[in-house]
Amino acid sequence: EEDLLESGGGLVQPGGSLRLSCAAAGFTFSSYAMSWVRQTPGKGLEWVSTISGDGGSTYYADSVQGRFTISRHNSKNTLYLELRSLRVEDAAVYYCAAGYGVIWGQGTRVTVSS
Amino acid sequence: SFELTQPSSVSVSPGQTARITCSGDVLAKKYARWFQQKPGQAPVLVIFEDTKRPSGIPERFSGSSSGTTVTLTISGAQVDDEGDYHCYSAADGSEVFGGGTKLIVL
Image (cartoon, rainbow over all chains, first blue to last red; front, side, top):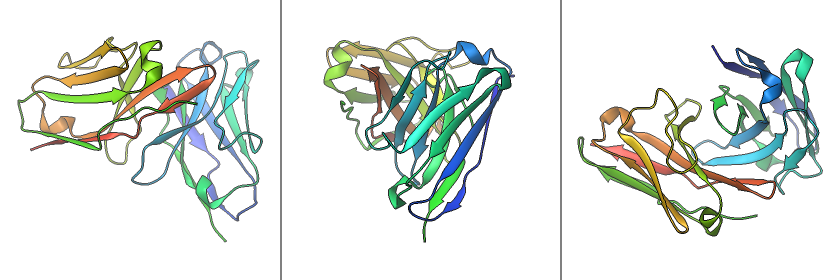
């Protein structure tokens, strides 16, 4: 069964850093573009970043460009998101998704507060 | 970047047809996807490439497109179809979700 499992969320102070991971299983990871999407409680979905299957191309929302870095390790079937210079408005549940939303994880919560 | 606009809520009685629209200039040249999301759960893809239904999605879910507007139609809506529906599209390295529509079936 296709599965994505996020980890790495938690409480961090404004200006701090965090690294999220997403472990994939049950499908050919390297064949899929992978994305991070976040959601604030009670709000809509916000696309954060996408990386191509071979990792050669990356794309970012303007709101995170220059602060977040997406990467992947295909031999480990794992997707990453490095979050730096975190702001209060970055607090959300972060989902990883494969194939532009064909497969979703259950999300990991990031809280940014002093 | 670009924007996708959805109504904040749509209400129907069980068995009626629910229609949720999504508008944006990008939709005239790019495909849309629709995601269903129930409280406390991750989104689920219900329509891709404007009109196609993934395996396992009930036939009562359908999609259509006209100009800069795409529409998700749920024929014979069920109480279990309640939730938030998000449209999505991508262009030029940017991806956008609509604001989401809460479907109420009662």
